[in-house]
Image (cartoon, rainbow, N blue to C red):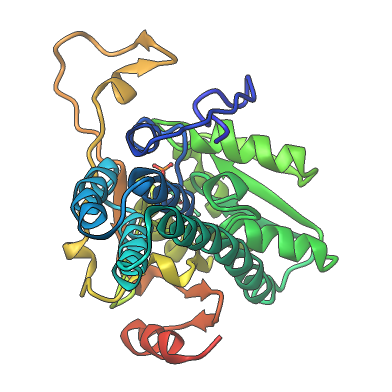
Length: 332
Ligand code: MRU
């Protein structure tokens, strides 16, 4: 894994050989972004079950699955990937340890490949929604190659639009407090030679009011069955401002991010992270000692503020309970 905590300063790669290491990497944000942590967790399950088979593998899976799922609770891709690995185990209880590991490894690699393909497909659907040329796209957090198996969801749409010949530029929110926008989105877009302008989160209202933003595109950690969208903290106020200024808000979401068992946003668990992320910048304390801190990592944007949800099977429009269910049924 590329250690995302070190970017953009240093490109450091880390290798994990056991599931605890993978869980720790997910928890500490060495790797982050819903689809990327799903892929990592799948690989973690394969590592965690290595050398086991049959009943022993089942017992081990219970522990490994609990540990990995607890690493980060909001992104449904993580639980989705772990459960999918669990089903492979159940289908292969008769295999010896070697063959079981091969089956689990292959499934984890399939999840990786499928995510890459999903991003490319949703990128095409999303690019077709961008009418302006040149187009200016506002995004929040990092829903790019770093957050996925590659290519990106929100940034996948940007890449697909660029590759289709459109002149696209991006305005990136810095994304307090972890600075995924300033550190990661700006880094990967610069590397890809896509023009990017960085703003602080609290500048988005002014930028939208000024005009010239074609659309807002964000990723998601979990979409509820009714279309409510959990994403990086700060997405909800951005959605309110986008609506206020008549700018469409598109959510890029592979089907692995849609939780049909979750009726609405109120049912999505919201992760709270350590106070130090808010109290410190780059390890230096900025808030007075002892001050009470609230650090939710995600917020929920109600479906009514979402113009469309772009998946690898097509574009869902309101009412989302119907359109998302229809996309789920549609064969690939
Ligand atoms: O806390 P993070 O950095 O993992 O949050 C990531 C986001 O909120 C992304 O927008 C989301 O996971 C989609 S990534 C394609």
